Length: 345
Image 1 (cartoon, helix red, strand yellow):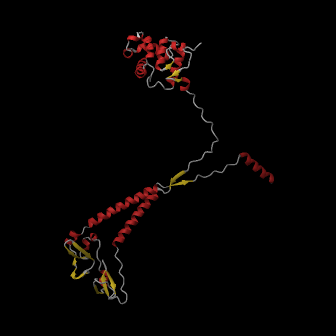
Image 2 (cartoon, rainbow, N blue to C red):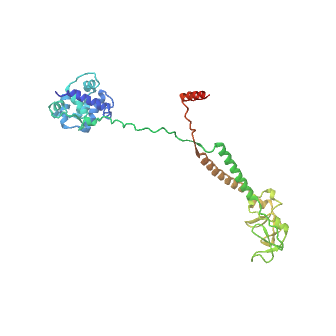
Image 3 (cartoon, rainbow, N blue to C red):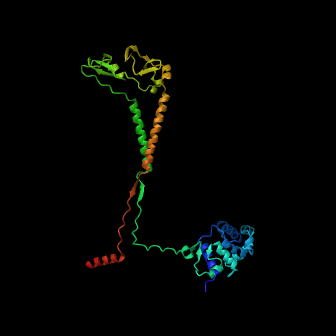
């Protein structure tokens, strides 16, 4: 005797519900949600062969009915008997409720009369045998030989933050001081050798030379040790301040001004005489603030790059090797060792 169709449909429904396959159309089991679910099913896959199921359920003539309109006008109470059945409040229900439930989950064969008359009793959901739709879970592979657990390597910063900060400050201080000293230090004066009784202007200072050794086009003047040692061209006029007045001389015409550390003739044209620096010339053609601002910008750039270096150094890591613990001797082995030592005495 074939299995009861109601039990088959209800079991298939519960299996689909428990596996989450009805969540899209029936998120909750209420009469209102059942009504909405049947509307969705009718819109997505209504078939003329299922009209008999709807006609029997709503007790109408299938030839003169618009079932979509009937479903829209149906009340939630129309599905109350079916709702009680799927909720387990009733053991059996009318066949029309089981047929309607079979249509909801797309179970075949349907309706119940087709199932009882069919020679093939294979239950399908959406054309797929239910046994293939819900395959048993594949058992996990048996565990193989386990590898001994390995400890992850431990990494710590290679340099401490205090060391990095102090190093960056020291590097910035030494670099800035060295640059400042290099910028202001004067070129050393070479002491004249024997026979060097003349000198010539070499860009920003005088150089001693023997008569007849100079290159063509370079003016040669008699050697003057005081001028050789003291006369310098100031290559950074913006370093001059009001304290330089009385200590600096200049040659200028228009915007072309040059400044020197000693008085006398202009080295490149001995017919011209250097003039003492005045406050007007100092203010008009030099700017100590410009010099300080430029050096401040350079200092900030240097600090930026030193900071980048510090960040890079702070991210360096080194691996810390964990101490290997020696296996402890078993208590029994210890007692045996003590006993053997005592016996030897």
